[in-house]
Image (tube, rainbow, N blue to C red; front, side, top):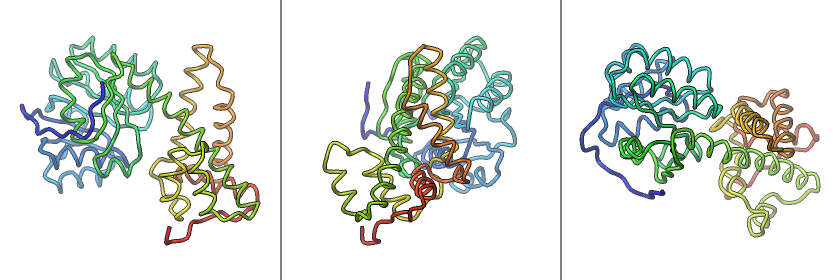
Amino acid sequence: MIQRNRKETPMSNPKIGFIGLGRMGRPMASNLQRKGFATLSYDVNPQGVAALVALGGRGAASIEEVARESDIVFTMLPAHPEVRSVVLDGIVPHARPGTLVVDMSTIDPLATDEVAAAVEAAGLGFVDAPVGRLATHADRGECLFMVGASAENFARVKPMLEAMGTTIHHCGPAGAGIRMKVVNNYLAIAACQLNAETLTLAARFGLDVERTIDILNGTTANNGHLKTNFPVKVLAGDIEPGFQIDLAHKDLGLALTSASAMKVPLAMGAAARECLQLARSRGFGGKDFSALLDAWCDLAGVAAPRLPSKS
């Protein structure tokens, strides 16, 4: 099921909790607050909470406070250890029966299954709704969501997702959303590494980067990152993270681990993960994953290409 370009005002005005106000979580929670949802937020970084309070939201002193006072709790966290800790130790023991837990993190699908089972056993509802697109899309309320949920829970959470994004895919029952996200990120991240190698080769050949991009975008070599992300990030000289190489490496690892358990070979993905590991070893782990281009140029001894500012 796909919903596009729709926004709804909350009808029953549920109390919304939001835990995890990083580069993706903060703008998503901000869009909820701006669009009429009452938010109670928590993050280990008080600056994130202060940003939501400045928009009219409420800040919580703990995860437990969020759990006690919310009808729906969203989590946007770095990896499965944090999700397990926050949800199983913080939310589940303190939430009211019927509370809906919506995890939007990108984690191991088996960890999602474990968390979902524990949440549902406690009399709570569970939805996995990992996010597609980039942090700049989150800023504009243009996220894409891949949702795993029962029909009832999907209906409960849909108005909030529409406040944060423009495209919502109901992928199936709980656990289907994160599995779709792993598939999506596998291709996106592997393609990003291929883009980096391609543009490094073009730079070594001495080709004009602007003309190279125009040609690649006009043939079957075209891909989303080359067309939309690279020109406004690394090729514009901006390698501050929208999505870190460290996180991209983690997400490729999720795909490879899951594939191994299912006996699915992912040979190109394994090579791409090692390329990202090489970039991390050279100090690029905290940079935007488009900065794989700079890491590869550094390795090849080639000046990293940049588009003219007029582009």
